[in-house]
Image (cartoon, rainbow, N blue to C red):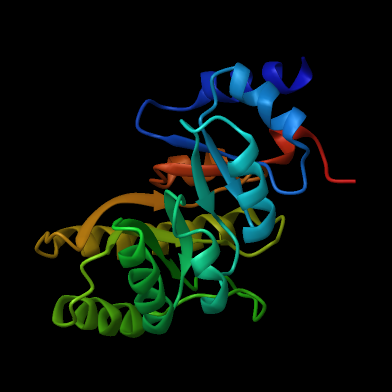
Length: 221
């Protein structure tokens, strides 16, 4: 019952406008079902094969979010069912998502990943690359993807001021994005930032979607 208690405790602290993604990577289906029975319907995975196995086995009213780095050649395995892809960091990947979504007659929602951390291991776009992608998306016939916002991961550090600066920087980019004319392919409403260790700070900085795993399911063995 600990998962249910953790989940309900976290949900009670979230503002109404903030969506909780329960990060369930490496966790068994029994753990996910405990969260499901407690009302959770959005789960985040970082490996497409594992996510697909869970999708096949679990109730079909679940929204599955791909939160890990995505390789273009793996998109086809999740195109049938994935609800939101968090880490889109290239036009090539967007084009592949569009191509695979077409095969299933779907429009797949995507978040563009921005590089905001002081770490070379993180993926993401800078502001110029973001603008180039947005321009290309409007010019190309990408009718089966929809960019619904941005995602970013802060530096892994205990320096809260640094994390806050990075979150506020991402929020400023998001604010500019929201000023752009809305189209069928661009409807920015989601700012995904914040995980178990920093989600409350992320919400203070304007996050509308948080990805929380260990605080719900416990640490990974």
